[in-house]
Image: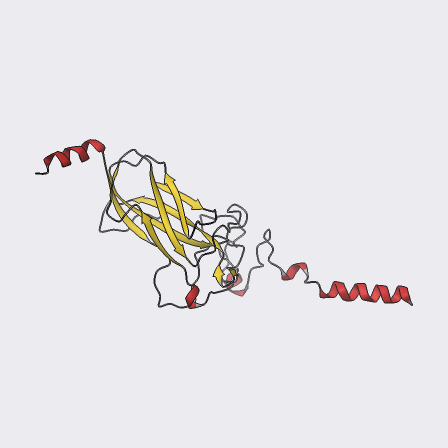
Length: 218
């Protein structure tokens, strides 16, 4: 009788444990849903597929409006003039993003639904610098002068990186990009809201030209 009771108790305890399939699997992509099956083509598999794919990943948890992500680039300042060929720091203040959460971009890209921690999105951020060949046309998203994922936890909401690419003279756009843990852009609960990301424009000049322009001033 004791043996039977012990077996029954063990089975009962095991039944209370969530099955493996009920928890997010960081290694396996979700099975293609009806939408992706109807469209055909390649299914998302955790890698970054440059030719396009269809993702069956659910969007996940959405924050309440008081926890919507918002960013402001603190450094450099908008329209600041920087010296060509020199390093400079980019710092961004991000509110309502629980930073330091970063899945493997080679194997787990878009495999984890957006998740919250105490109401705030778990994720990370990026800084990208693009050359502006024209002020009247959007730059090609495939081309950038500098890109860096900010994967560490923020210090009082501030993340920073040193741009060590030697930028040549010209006009540049510097943007922050906030992402969920699995690299998808953060998803907000309402359409009417402020932007979750920030961009500034800067001018890069050679130090020789900057000295020459200063000498001309009365």
